[in-house]
Amino acid sequence: MNQQEQSLETLNDIKKIMERSSRFISLSGISGIGAGICALIGAWLAHDYVFGYKDYIMDQGNHANTGGTSWILNNRLFWIAVGTLIAAILSAFLFTWLKTKKDGILIWSNSAMRLLLNLSIPLIAGAIFLFRLIHFGTFGLIAPGCLIFYGLALINASKYTLDDIRYLGYVQIILGIINLWFVGYGLYFWAFGFGFMHIVYGISMWWKYDRDKRIITGGKNDNDD
Image (spheres, rainbow, N blue to C red):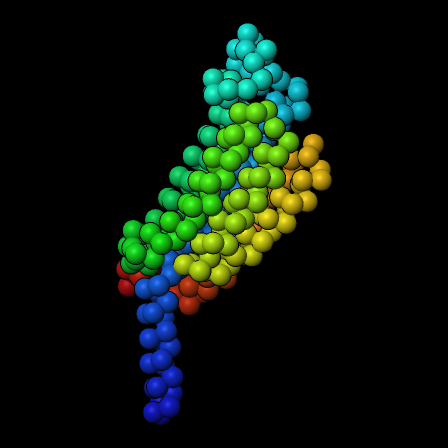
């Protein structure tokens, strides 16, 4: 190896170190797949309630009340959404934690905290806005609102992690905007954006990053002889 090649290798190593310190690069493709599966299961559970095949109000006596916090908390669709969100977050956290452990990276690093902060700001603002929409019974804008705010959150956080999530954010925003003109099909847009597109994103991430590592290492762990 000549001096020029050694210099290039040194520069590449420095670049990798700087990228590792400024970006959280241990996102797991499997976590995207898991989150997408959770979203599809949630959409399947909500389908009959959304389209009127099942009664989504737990207490029959509350039908006259079309708004208010008590009505929201007594809504089966609300709890399906909450359960789906919790399952997706736990799934994403579990697989990401396993990947950081494998890569020897602290999951609560400064880059991870910056990623979480920039992801949370649009999500929290969107959650408050959507909760008020539910409070006033404006259900047709819930699905597109979820997609748009989630897309904004991904784009906002993309500068602190892999660039791939920015493109997923663009797709979510585009789906949300289109859904504004097809309000009655919100559940299908929601399932496609949060479910199918997360699975596609997860497979792409696995193929692009995790698969390459397995090929290079011959499918062995770092601790293998």
